[in-house]
Each structure stands twice: as structure tokens, then as C-alpha cells.
Length: 351
Image (cartoon, rainbow, N blue to C red; front, side):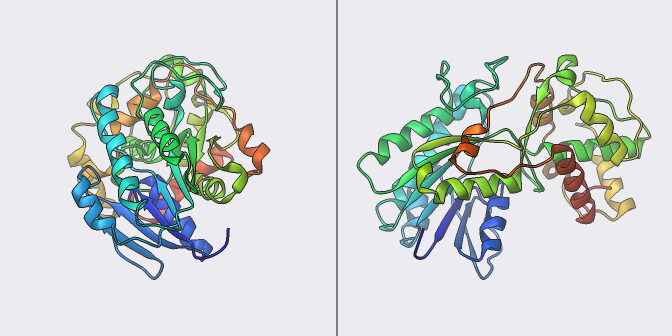
């Protein structure tokens, strides 16, 4: 790729978008515009814009001047109570973004869409594993599929291209994000230590022994930019994962060791229920350990923890397509967890 590079990162405050901005900024090759509902602090290379992407008028008002954008990295997400209810807002945000940028950005080269294993039905129950990008679709609703179909239809006859990136559970450091498993585990372990109780796996019994994989947020950022800037990757989907598999029954003792906790037998429980009364405990931990003054509601999503720990079946996808196309980075998942926990401690997010 030659010429000026201007990235529009949609969903800039999430664990995926935030790490993507960090990676783009570190290369020194990009000007970056981050979109989110809350906005953010600008820097030399990063401009933040607060926008309601569900409002097409606000989207056009805020984005119509972004004529220099060359790449859209779409990682926005809005949660809803049911799978069917997820479709309308999440498709609308993508449509509004593209409809505002494409007519004015004459140098637009690529639109990158962040997806996930929901494309394969991983959220519904046991599915064919390892999942491959060529696997047939499942019965809708599924907004990831609808978003990709929109891009495919919109791209026909255009000079720009698209890519679809499909990570497993993404782990990184970010507050106020509903889908951050590493922080769920870290806060749960910190509270277990504070209360003097052993670290118990809270998920379904079958989940403790099933195969699973993770995707490091830093690795995901590199892969996303690689796919968006490699001509051979045009109009392709890629599974992106760390490259190793594990079972919680083997990983859990390693996590407990980091937090200097004993491991007790798993005990199935809803974290969303048992952690609902822990705000006073969290506030006391902030005072006692000098933690960053973060509202309990912004620390962790216990419902997301329940979701992941409820997978009593293998959740794995084949990542070899990305390797065949030239992306060879991998991450040791145990090392990733320990690195993230250390980072969280250094940032005074956990005790």
C-alpha cells in the first residue's frame, strides 16, 4: 500500500478497537480517527469523535468531513437481550457508517469487518469443529452474517475491498467493555482472594474439560491490519486465534497460582447472580489496595463470563487459512493470561 493512510476505527473504546488504535499508532504510518459514543482524548496521530451511529443524521453530520479516510476498521457492537434483537442495531450502525463515508472518501481502499465464531453458530450449541471459513451458514438470525452480506453487496463494482475477521474470545486490557473475559477472570480471582475463598471454576461441568481457544487483542490488531493491507486478502474471511488450544481444567490452576489462590472443585453458579452484591466489596478493595477509582458497573461483565463458561462443548476454529495467506504470528495463551493480569495490576485495575 502506498500513499497516505487514514484509518477510521469504529468502536474505538472497546477492547478490540482500543488495541487496534494502539497498534496503528505504534507503526507510525497511520493517521487514526476513532469513533465511539463516549469519544476520547486526542493525540498527535489520533482524533476521537463522539457519534451515535444508530442515528443516520448524526452519523452523516459527524463523518461527512472525513474525506481522507482510506480504511474503515469496523469493530462496533451494541448488545441486546436476544439474538434476533441484535440484528437491527448492529446492521444499522455498519450501514450508517459506510453510507456516510463511502460517498465522500474518494481514496477508500478497504473496509474491515470484525466478526466472530457466531458465524458458525458457536453461541447456539455444539457446532462443527474446527470451524472453517468455508463452512455453510446456519439458520438466522445472525447479524455477523447480515453485515458481511451488506458489504459484499455494496462492494460489487467498487474499487475498495473488504475483509471479515473472526476471532475467538478476545482478551486484552480495557474497562467498560462487556466482552472482556480476562478482566472477568481477574476481578473474580481478586475478589476470591479478598474473601479468603479458593478459586472455583464457575461454569458448567462440561465446560471445564472442553477444548477452547482465545485471541490476544494485540495479535488480533496485527492480523486485522495485515488482512486490510494485503492485496491477496481482498474480499476474504479469516479465523484469527492464538494458535493453541487448552482446557480450563488445565488453565485454571495456572490462573490460581498467579493470584496465590488454592483451587477447589468447580461449582456451577451464575456469576451474574453471585457477583451482583459485590459492589461494597469492590469499593473497599479500591480503598485498601489503592486501585484506580472505577465504578463497579464498568469493571466487568459477569453475564459475559457466564456465556463463555457455559460452553460445555469444544469451541475451536481452523486458523490455517490466515497462515496460508501469510500471517504467521501466534501467542501462547497461558503466557497471554499472565501478561494481561500483570498489566492490570500495574495499572491498578486489580489487586
